Length: 402
Ligand SMILES: [Zn+2]
Image 1: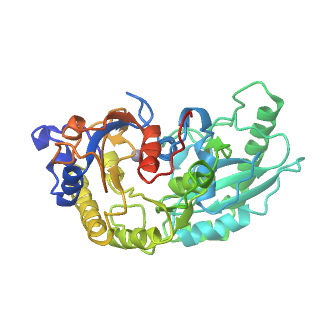
Image 2: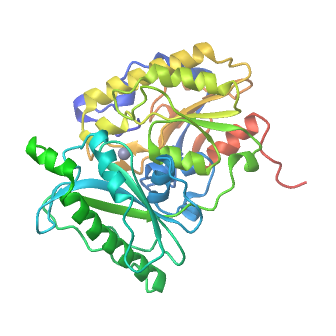
């Protein structure tokens, strides 16, 4: 949601231009500030950002994106397992990538292909695999067995026209070497099965790209963190459509709430998510309502769509303001990172934050925005500070000292 000033908006940000009465009301009745989600100038990933917003020291506990993706897609990841994010892709006979998403393959085709891959065993190893497709071309691969390592590189060159990479060990350990060997062997076998798969024959016949290779990246394992119930003694839940975010929240011991129509895209059902959040709050102390939508047009450089998405989020917040009793509930609005619609990347600029609720030290800020919030009473905090502040407001942060 947060951005940098945009020339075509007369040097305002999409958030500053958007019509957002609900956000402004939260800013006006609350305490505002700006927040370095990881640290000043560090562009956060969505996974490290969410860890930080939930109060964890992401720099210390982060263990790669793959495990979160796998957990969020419903695979049980245990300590010692290594999980990777995967794409169904199209390659030519020389293993040069023609399409990283196999023409954004439909879920139905991907499910059938994934089923065949699930049965593959790596040569000469007792390691078990789980392969599961999620949405379209996205999937996760999990290795389970002794002596595995997350210190392995990617096979995904992340560029069309480049050759699929051989997975390399990233340190000198036997475990890393062994894991890289197992993965390279598996990916060859996957290619062979996919190449001859009836689904792909059918796709080619219909003029669609065959999903004849699996690209993988981001090897990771489950981070060793205490669930929120243990840290603060709260029941926590998360409303999100994005498996990466769901994975982080699950590791934090939060209940995952699935919402019909929530897609993680600008076409998501915003109001269905707001309704689910209000419902979930009845049985939980803390609810994280996550909306991916503004990040998508930012990466596309689509300023107009970003403004429209922010206005839809504002309508969700309007619903929350109406349905949630603010005499006994705190509502915090923020972003997990700045995504510049000019650079089309996550950037290290701080994000705005506003918290409203009973007995809050309200400040003079009357508008929610990157620059207005900088003048607020919270001043400049870090992502890791947010949970202790919120938990203290509801009487759950433990006293430090006697
Ligand atoms: Zn992004």
